[in-house]
Structures are given as C-alpha cells and as structure tokens.
Image (cartoon, rainbow, N blue to C red; front, side, top):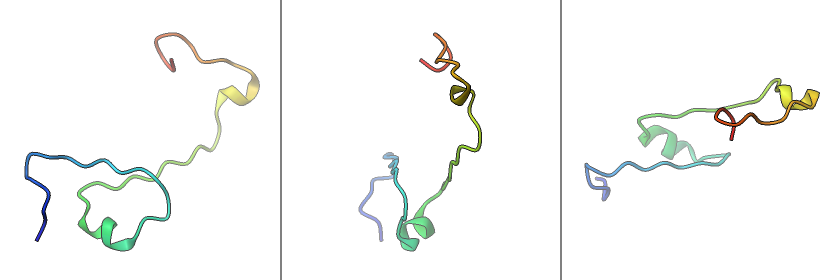
Length: 50
C-alpha cells in the first residue's frame, strides 16, 4: 500500500539508495561523468549550461 496520491510524482536524489526504494520506483537513473570540457578550461556557455 502506498500513501502517495496517484497525481503526485516524487523525485529523489542521492547515492546509496535502499534497495526497496529502487524496487518501488518507476524510473531509476545513475549518472557518472567520465569526461567534461570544463576540465580543459572551457567555461559554461550562456543558454546551454547556464
């Protein structure tokens, strides 16, 4: 049984989530940066990153 109303969407962020939350979730995403041009000194561009 869930206490969350049908018309409510929950967005959770963080790491090391309890497996039960993953089981109950409709969408689970893990993001990991491998390479970013910022490391070469390129700053954020108006309208794209900021």
